[in-house]
Image 1 (cartoon, rainbow, N blue to C red):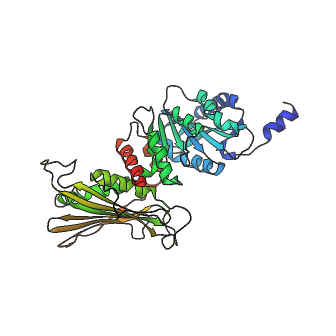
Image 2: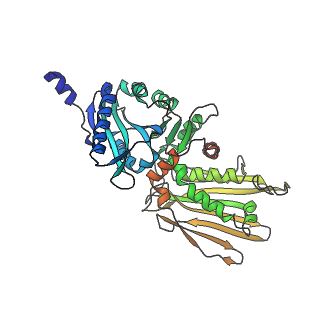
Amino acid sequence: MDIVKQNAENTGPRLPWAGKRVRIEQVEDELAHLWHLTADNVRISQNINVRTSVLNFVICAPDIGSAQRASMLLRDLSSTHIARVFLLILDTSGLPSQTTTWVTLRSFPIVSDVMRHHFEQVTILASGAAVYDSPHLIEPLFKPDLPVYLWWLQDLPYNNATFNRYVNICSRVIIDSSTFEEAGSSFQVLLSLIKPSTAYAISDLNWGRLTPWRELVAQFFDVADYKPYLGGVNRIEIEYAAPPGQTRRLGDTPFYSTQAMLLAAWLKNSLAWEFTHGSTLDEHDPRSGTYAWHMSRTSGPLANDQATGKLGILVSGDIALRPRTETGLQPGTICSVRLSSELRDKSAIFSINREGEPDHVLTSVELNQGTRPTRAVSLATTQRESELLHNEMEIMSRDLRYEETVKEAANLLLE
């Protein structure tokens, strides 16, 4: 290799965590070489390699820092049996068109350090016009006959050709709606991706964060004595974390909680509530993050609890979202959920509240005859990003309940 060519290949960023720098046409040969090295380790009894391949995993990151964090998180996904990871750093800062490639073999213990799981990682830094062409660069490198999962590590772009290209080569698209900068437009982009005709399915880590909250709400009404109160719910209040000062002043930047929006949309859909259009009780203040909607539905059994099919009069309900100052929680995280119910001459309040505990919530029920004992529930395990990602990668089918909730959330922001 001449000096000029050698110097050209040594320029650019150095990413020690990404492995060996190679030309993209050398990827297959270099990975084969790494596998030969691990086979030699087996022959001298250093370890036992486990290689089970079930999917290709594409990660699109906006910068090197977020790509490195994603790379570190992959060690917690060893049981997912990824065949090959493509970590794409899509630099849209205006640099000249260029691609730089690294390869490595990731190795993690399964039972002990003797038995190890391996998967391949290809890291590509693309800039300029190469960002647009990057889907075509990696597609020939996919492990054949395996599904392709995409994890998009940023807000959803509107009418972005590169993003659309990645979506169209994948069977599952994983996003995190907590990264939405402007919830109204981002939910509309998300809604445009959810079509019955598409070959891919959508997963949202933020929806996974809500799973324990949805389960706890449902568990209230699994109790026979409380089940009748479900049809009498007439007010829903959701509080979410805001940084100090956000709740006391109007900011210049819109403040949203997509978690709160999704939870409100799920409850609205579950209770079969409909908008009361033009209600003076509605409140939309994105600068302070406060929202309220006035709803109505026909009284009687809910759609999923039609014991008699008998319907009654039109009853009203309200949904209110408001921020709560919390210093120990990520802004937008759900702090509390409160459902109020009126059932003839009885009333009840069902509450789930963090009460300053980031990893625990307390559930309580207040009835006319007194408050029932509270119950503490841990959320620590269910909120880890690696656990959320692992759970989404285990899902093969479409989540129809999530898709319905996204439609409701988009409608809430339009009302």
